[in-house]
Length: 422
Length: 177
Image 1 (tube, chains in turn red, blue):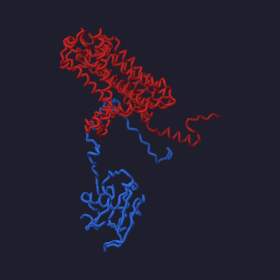
Image 2 (cartoon, chains in turn red, green):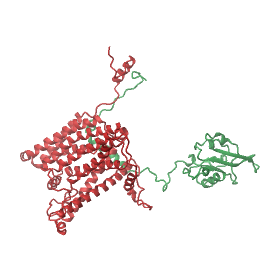
Image 3 (tube, each protein chain N blue to C red):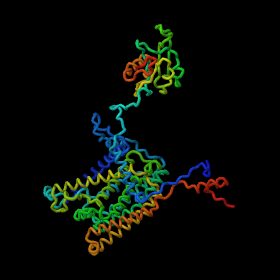
Image 4 (cartoon, rainbow over the protein chains, first blue to last red):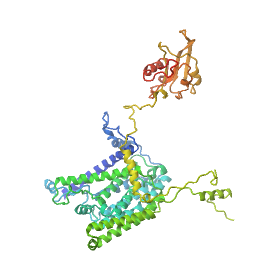
């Protein structure tokens, strides 16, 4: 019992330390990529304090953190003080608690357990192994993030904050549906809500879910961008429109808690994209698929592969930020309800059909490859239909007729928007 | 201008083709652009270590200098045209009878308040003998206001500092050939 508790505590310490350091250094990476894309050099000055060693600016996160710690923790006089403090705490604790069920590797070899007295099982690189409701737990906790955002916006007692909070709650709720539909497709094929089982299935078949369910993958990636409030869906903060959105009134430690939570959301989204759709720790030929007789090489290769994939997805997140402008709020909602939701349903129906009638479909379509080809055909058709029928590219240009009409109305002395009654 | 004015030209937004409606080609195009910039040459100049390249030092308007003629005397004839032209009134000249036979007056003292100067270059244009010129030195610093009032010796020393890199501009008045 003691050994198990210590094992869990060590894993929690590793994960928390890794996540906090990771979040800090992803801020630096974000600034670097922003600079490089704009043909600048980015932060490259801060190195070891009191020396002239610069280390490419790797000391920058430390300096940023110190700056936040030593800043005045200003609480404006007009805020709801309890909720104002509670909001960042709730968003950060929810963002961290999600990682209880997210594997950050696979398993360690049995020889490791033999070295440590009291350990009678293989160590799984997962804080809470064997939780049967893993994905539901993730969904429940990521919904709590909405509370953090809307409570912060409400408690700030500021119009910009409230608008940011409102936008955020509408956006997060809207995108949870397509995200859920995309996940259900994965759950159906895996037959389990555990993330380690999802990876295990992809590793044993060698087919990543992104290949087997392309439309589900696209829907999930778009929804993950929206859930993490990353560009092009960063409307909750939208500093050009809303100053800072829900964290306009925050400063000091409470602000950095919000910022860390945002980065953790992005890291969570990357973990989920990689685990659910990009094979998790699996890579053909080097990671093996057996858990019981895993070698040290395979165990370490799995951790490395998983982290490389996650790093790649995060870089993709950051590159998309500079490639696409922000969408308008009505476009965001149209995308969620009129495009992503139908696409998610198409994916779900297709996956359900394949899972239910796998044997007869394989017989009719010529083996598993025929089924995959049919899935791609359905996905392509659905995507083209969604693209052609999409409500997103509406004509926003100035229309001559409406201008002429309003000009005539002005000449008659009628102000637009004012109905004259006799 | 009224919307009904015949001079107003109404243009249509370009229609999206099938590839544009499919989004993925547009995303890949955008990512290709950002990726290209990710690895392209950076514009940043790491200032204290690197110096920016000034396109044409001869027309740059930086710190002033007082030119010397071929005998090492100050070229200024104390005509006060620069002080008159100066919109910021930062030039302070005290004239004295010239000790040399080729001119009536010379400047006994010549001070420019570099903090007040707006670096417009009017003094340079006004000068009939090309005595005052603007160099390409731009990183002008000092610890006090007094230090930033450049006197005649300082301005002549700026000439000694920059004469090789930036020769005098006007050939007819003794500039570089």
